[in-house]
Image 1 (cartoon, rainbow, N blue to C red):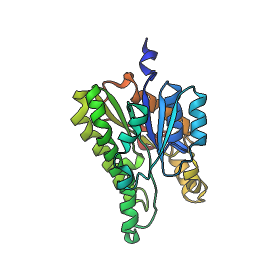
Image 2: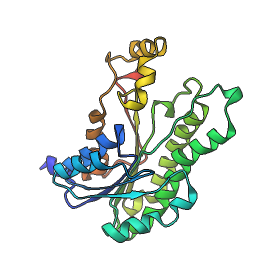
Image 3: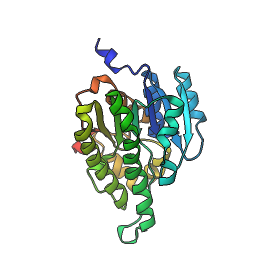
Image 4: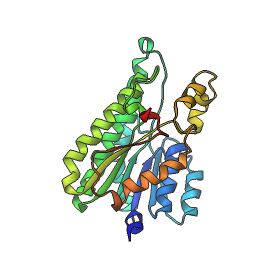
Length: 253
């Protein structure tokens, strides 16, 4: 049955940045499809996501690490799999944001943002790959943005990181697709989350953004769940190196 291809029963998914917003919605979607969930966060503020995952009948583990710290990432996947046994699905979602005009953008903010969005994603991909390669299967989903294709305003580091993440996704797919690992990405548009409150409430940018979205509204976080479940499932076994846009038509305009 076709619906059986979307089931994730018995699989273990690591979702970074899953304590709130888009990451939380994707983690809950994976749990509802049958996966047990692992998350990593700087602060062990996982009560809400834990309760949502357990309400779906799935197991939940949380680990504390600052993904922006190379030292914190050393041996992180070994530490996780020492408890969970393995990781079948990796969703690189963790992110930070800094907004400055390019001519005054602090290099420290540039470095910090690329460390989280790009370097940490590659690091975790490298760390999960040996186990996936040994088993001959695995799913990696990198979370990009519509800024994977565009430049935005006053976000040069973010735009650069998301462009680079798409290239990384395609490069890893070329390397690992023949060995059973699917590497793909999702490019969300504008979604209603606590992190986007200031932008939604901005009297100038808020209406400008809304007016440019063809479907006429911002997305709801749970509207990413179906896409991540698809990419993590056997239904996407022939999908490699793709970036899937979920943006209300933003990029079509």
